Amino acid sequence: MNPRLLAEEIANRADDFLHGITNPSEAHNEIVELLAIEHPALTAEARRQIADAAMKILRDEDFFTMADASTDGWSDDGDADDESV
Image 1 (cartoon, rainbow, N blue to C red):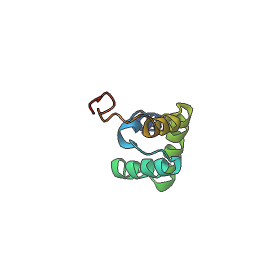
Image 2 (cartoon, rainbow, N blue to C red; image 1 turned 135 degrees about the horizontal axis):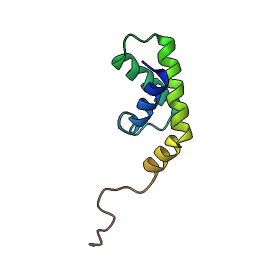
Image 3 (cartoon, rainbow, N blue to C red; image 1 turned 60 degrees about the vertical axis):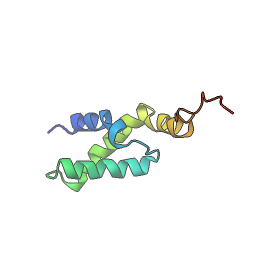
């Protein structure tokens, strides 16, 4: 198992399992937990290192900036175009 490839795979899936999480510390914890579930043979140190690498990828891609924008932006509840009185 290649740690770099695993970190990239985790980062690629972040939209799914980190949906709504905008706090990087919370995201890191979620990644460590996901690694513990999906790869129980990894040591705690290996999980932390892979999570750190995945977080670097996510920061480089402005993942948390985009997550903030999507939670603070316009609501997409379908009522925005409702002009009825």
